[in-house]
Length: 79
Length: 79
Length: 138
Length: 138
Image 1 (cartoon, chains in turn green, cyan, red, purple):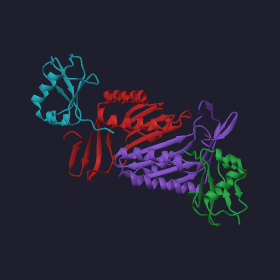
Image 2: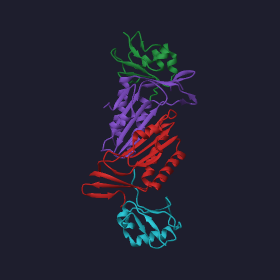
Image 3: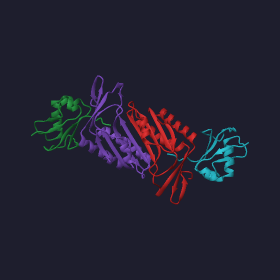
Image 4: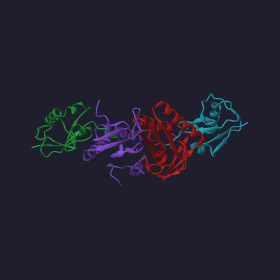
């Protein structure tokens, strides 16, 4: 099983492309975060990196389902 | 000598008309104010009554010239 | 283009916003005061704004000058209506342009607050059963 | 009429002001954010706004709901632009209608401050010598 992660802003440049396939499944948001930091250490240098699950900001201990829509939210700068 | 006083807002209703001729001359804004309060006691019941001289708010001890443009400024309510 | 400080029978929000919008500024705050169709539970039929125009223009200019001194703003425009006005019509439009939004908000609020205290303009409210000069009496 | 919460390539101040202006309300505050032609001393050629639209709309709606809870306001409209934008063009328009002006100012400032913190929209600035995602790095 795998998660498809939507990428936005600078995370597109860091990871490359507009989606990232994890290759394996993660139980929590925190596990996914550690996995991404391992492969893409530049993500850890951002001012912040939130992870959204089903269009809501998630906490690291929130659990993931395979059907969840997951997105990386680097520091926002609208307005 | 006399002063011509421009009237605005509710002072028009109290005094009648849009100007008031004082009939005699006054040395200071305060003297003019007391004169007006004597003849039109309703002026004293207003929330405030400023007197403008040459388009500026005046103090009671400011001196009057016969050429001054004088106006009664009841409580303003623009905006 | 109309003056930054302006009093007329008819004023226009779009005029003001067009005049103040420039690529140099990132933030514009606009305050729009309109005639309400009710006040303190009573239906308002119309308003009449009386204005001591030369002094009102001077006082409005003083507000603009003071706003520029006190806040980090680039431009300020203040337009006020006079004469007979009906519910929904414009009474006042104030626009402030700044590089940073906080100054724009602060200066705009300062300007409308001060205008209501110092600018010689008087509002008469007409109800179904009479009329009153606003704020004249305690 | 467009929705109160709206994201599009092109937004329009007049649309927003027309939609929020009603004879019931006396005070409208409007915040207009435009693309500046410079930032920190550098000339800005253009911007690109990227947007996670479904989530951005939800977050903008949350801001509107919270503004209505926290302040005595009647209506709030938030429109944000996406895509390529040039200096002077609109980035965001927020309008708040209230019976009393203080609430309108407070809610409008709350809305733009919160939008800049929570709504998933990203701004890339293009200079003559490169481009940068704003706020990404310390």
